[in-house]
Image 1 (cartoon, rainbow, N blue to C red):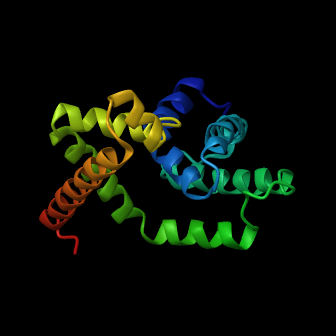
Image 2 (tube, rainbow, N blue to C red):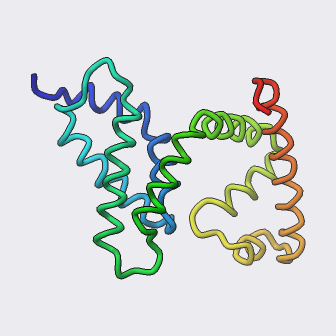
Length: 173
């Protein structure tokens, strides 16, 4: 039976964020993640006829993404910012072992970000979206780097407390 584009698109879109986080956890250079995701999506589509309907899509997609990361790093091996295959394997195994906790943490981080005051959410977005260095965000907001550092430290602590509280409410220790 030939692969169905609608079925693939539905599965891929549903799991894209988790797959993105998985790929990002295996790479040193964040700027490589988007390139790898495009390549992984292409390969997933090519291999979709091999996907067994009824089995979980994400583990299958993560396995393919793992090999795409290995291949990518092998092709880019002259660059200093790529990990050796043994290290990537260790990261992938560790990620798999702690996947439920990582997903719960991500879930609660999203909820806790929503609870932040608007100004704090904006600072977090400015700082962690794209290439927002501390100095650049300080300049944009009219604060000193030291004042912004302290504000970010306070926000991160509030987020940590909130995430821990949320995890504890679900039985995570």
